[in-house]
Amino acid sequence: MTDGPPLLEMRGMVKSFPGVQALRGVDLTLRRGEVLALLGENGAGKSTLIKLLGGGLRPEAGVIRIDGRDTPLATPQASRRAGVAVIYQEFNLVPGLTAVENMFLGRESTRGGFLARGVETRRAAGLFARLGVAVDLELPCRRLTTAQQQLVEIAKALACEARIIVMDEPSAALTPHEVGRLFTIIRELRSQGIAIIYISHRLEEVFALADRVTVLRDGRNVGERPIAQITRRQIIEWMVGRELQDEFPRRQVTPGAVRLEVRGLRRGRAVREVSFSVRRGEILALAGLVGAGRTETVRLIFGADAREGGEIRLDGRVLAIHSPREAIAAGIALLTEDRKLQGLVLEHSVRENFGLPNLNWLCRRGFVQAARERAAFAEYTARLRIKVPHSEVRAGRLSGGNQQKVVLAKWLARNCEVLIFDEPTRGIDVGAKHEIYLLMNELAAAGKALIMISSELPEVLGMADRILVLHEGRVTGEIAEARGATQEQIMQLAVA
Image (cartoon, rainbow, N blue to C red; front, side, top):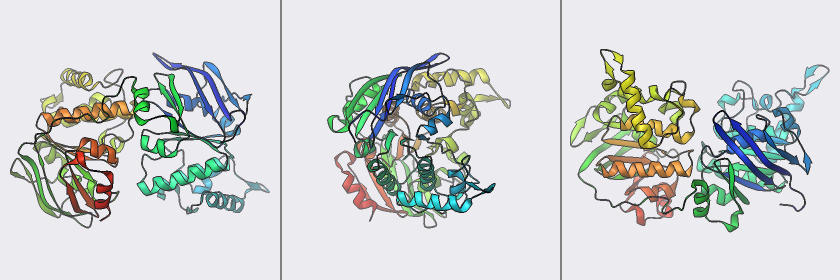
């Protein structure tokens, strides 16, 4: 970081929407060569503030200064001209165009009235070399990995000569190796004097990367401090607005009889002779690196993929599961890792999403009893504290945490005996995480058997009673007492 006036100042930012005061005089300061972590729960105002900076929204009050000069950012074009680039969680790329075409879309180089593709390709290659990475410049972006598409977005920002880059949940869909590479690139950009605003719900990333932290809650600044002068606990307390007793709520575990038992599950090289059991009232975590076979294993249990061998028992009874419909009928529920693609129909209302797996008791003579459906959903809305304006709002309009709660509600209404949580808190804020942890404990206390997959090792150690570690489709070890284990123990088994 350098001395002198801030590169960016946002002072007294105010913005409201019908019925919602999104920002209430928010301030933000960013210096050259700084990584600023912008934190807050869903609905705290982070996205609105970034849209003001990116020119997607106009403030009702407040001023934005770049290099000490008032700089109105009325449009995305004005924002880009001012040296601001926003990389949203949903990438702004045209899938059918190549990396080069996306990088210079709307700013194409021409020569004699014709596109100068050679010039653009050489410039793109130079930008990727500056990042220290290689991307196939001729492939359509839809054929690139998520990490490669993110690199295209970063290179596109550099092509615009951005001095301020905003990254919104950049690691959400990346593997640990890809996250490490992203961090290396961010540190390199910082060394070049580029300022980064980093938005993430993963606090371990914040402590690994950020120079300073700014926290919003309910549209207001509630805390700001250099990363070296703050603790994880303090950040969480700022975000949720109350003293934190325990990030991972403790409970007394007295597991009962075995509820779910699987023996010798097989599917190609993805799942190879996997066997384990889960008891009544127990939370079993499946741990391992990306590609270890965790999700593939639970998909076999749920009937989403056909198994080549193995046996599944529930309360001692052998189950013939060949489809999700049969798994649901047997009392098994799966909360998928991608709630947007597999857990919800985003264009349908939250009421309709709630009703989909429950039509057997919500229908009468082939017709959905709408009043009964609304009443049942209202019950779970209150129980899970789902923030929705009404039951007809589209699922796609909810925050990540509230989307996850809708998925939970539909399965709780089924009263399933085995609940599988695949990355249950991915992309949601710490307040919503805590509520999901409490709910998981409540379900276990009621005698349900829970299987949890999580890539966040603190979450695994904090929530699980027992840990099963997989590597390349095989079980490589079991940790019987999760609360006394360490991340190092899990990683040793995960790379075995």
